[in-house]
Length: 260
Image 1 (tube, rainbow, N blue to C red):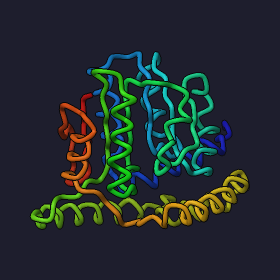
Image 2: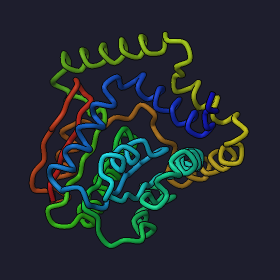
Image 3: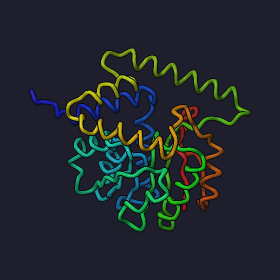
Image 4: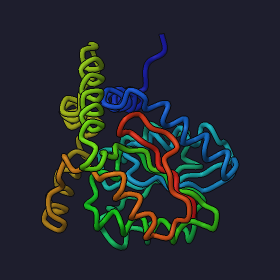
């Protein structure tokens, strides 16, 4: 029996945990990778914002062998996990440790322009003012005709209470079913397991120190913060994108496509 690589096992458990909250996560990934191919082609530079351990970059690079990606995150533990688990992509995937709340985050990229900006389940934790700035910077980085794809939970507006209630019910039902399966960790359990794993001990220590410094500098994050669809559209419009629209949706889980 072939031994399972411990880093791959950790990444797999991360994916299982995320899928518990997002049952159509792989479908969303597939739509993003397919859209890039149809609009941009197979050879491109992608910028993955809030990449975590690189699940989206992994799928993009697997689907497009001529592509390269730059993966940006500020969590030392997730970056450490991704670099080890996705080492097979080392020649096409570059990791950047940067906080999107820092106005100078883009200076660490090492490039002047990219063809695609992507993000999934990440930008929702940015305060609206920071989100506007991130979209403006993304627009400056994108070459003419480039695209931005953001897959995330984007709540309905205040006047759509019925829609929002149905979305919340569907999300709760999916999570309950997923985490009833033995071995599938929820968010709290995954982080408890990861931070106590000896492979990630050093990164876990860095993560704690980093979060304390960031909370002092930027203020603590609101874990329940979700930015509405209309706010995303307004931010993208003000950033200079010329075509903006939803190309995939499951209740409030959506993919927004914006064309530069």
